[in-house]
Length: 184
Image 1 (cartoon, one colour):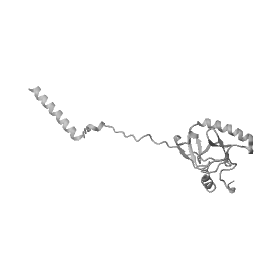
Image 2: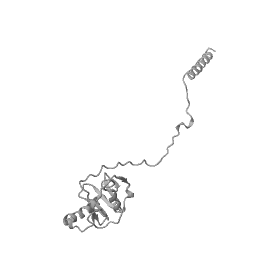
Image 3: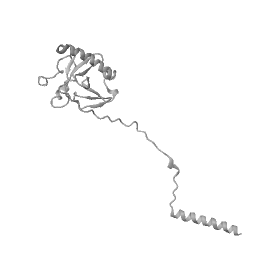
Image 4: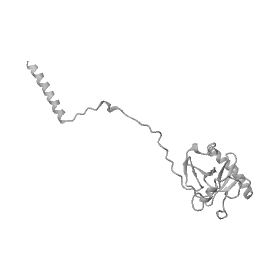
């Protein structure tokens, strides 16, 4: 009997201890759905490409036509600037940009939006085409017979009207198509 009384007292003590602990310490039981994890995929985060620094040249570059890709390219400047379909395109740091003039401001262009003449060739191939045409331009000097024009700077007091003229059909001329006497 003594043994039975001891068991009852230990059980009661343990129960009392649990009751006191429960009243002092907050015990929370997580709901059954606490382990559920929901993911919503809104697509690939956008790639942010900063505009390149401005193109700085002493004089407007000469743009020479490259027959094989069917585009114009700037010669005599340390930039990869091309002209096609009324826009200038600039390749820098693995990215393409476009502008209304060779001096920018430049807007990023995704590759699939490039005109076919630029999209069809790697930049290295365009460099080869440029070098080949530039050799002929340099050898013939002022008597160069290929299509070419002087580039316009872009939007601004001097370039605004000239940029509009790029939208006309390209033709072989010495100066930029449609440039007036005061622009030369």
